[in-house]
Length: 103
Image 1 (tube, rainbow, N blue to C red):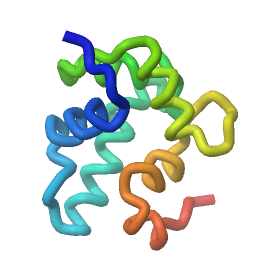
Image 2 (cartoon, helix red, strand yellow):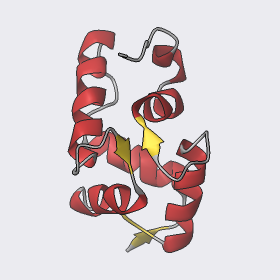
Image 3 (cartoon, rainbow, N blue to C red):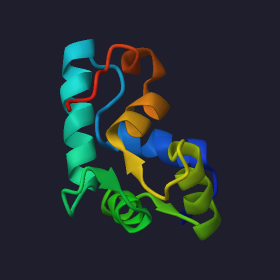
Image 4 (cartoon, rainbow, N blue to C red):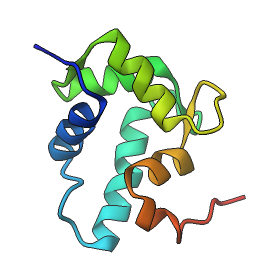
């Protein structure tokens, strides 16, 4: 069965990765682990194929339309990839206020 909603796909993936209902410190560590799990080429950003593969690995199958909308939803700067700050800002806007990228 394919998921036809961006929000439902994200909720299912977060539940499967145990990113809900955690303390702030454990959530931060889990978010970093989740990003690393998806970032297979270790480029520091997530491409569409990496995101698709991660959802499939979690057993969350999305339509092509949902994947396109998901990439647009996360990719705030429109460069075609999702960096860690976009990932964090989209999933956890409250936590992202304290996030400072490492230079």
